[in-house]
Amino acid sequence: MSANTIKLHVDHTYNVPPSVVYDAWLNPQMAKRFLFATEQGHVVRAEIDPRVGGRFLIIDRRPTGDACHCGIFLELRRPKHMVFSFSAEEHDHNPDRVEIDIEPLGDGSRLTLTHEMCAEWGAFEEKTRQGWMHVMDGLERVLQQTDRLAS
Image (cartoon, rainbow, N blue to C red):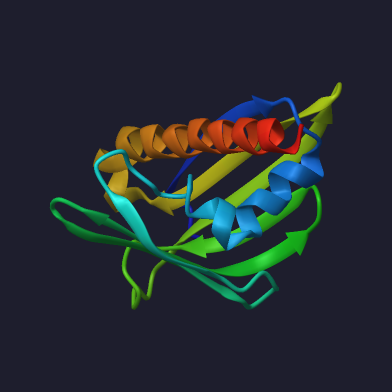
């Protein structure tokens, strides 16, 4: 990305090890419960090819229409780092870049997400930040539910 970009950061702590957080992002059955899922919508498609060069596609059917989120994995270093291109349209030629770092934190972990987007989308910076915070909260709920089921 050029110097004409915005970088926004979101972080969240979890009560599970980094590998559990990392793997949830790459598991379609788990990801469809938190990744771009909204309360008003229903994820109707979650495809994830978890390899460098692999693609992902998440479609949330909402009252206003289908919301498509897609990208390509650029770096995958389990359990601490992933980078992917990100777009809300399948054939976007100028996708954003999202970087996720997961570090151990006691018995749990901290996930830090950095979203780098073109400055022309600056009006959407706060909405984008709120969207990622919703994803992080959703991931926490999914991990808690999974932990309860395993106990």
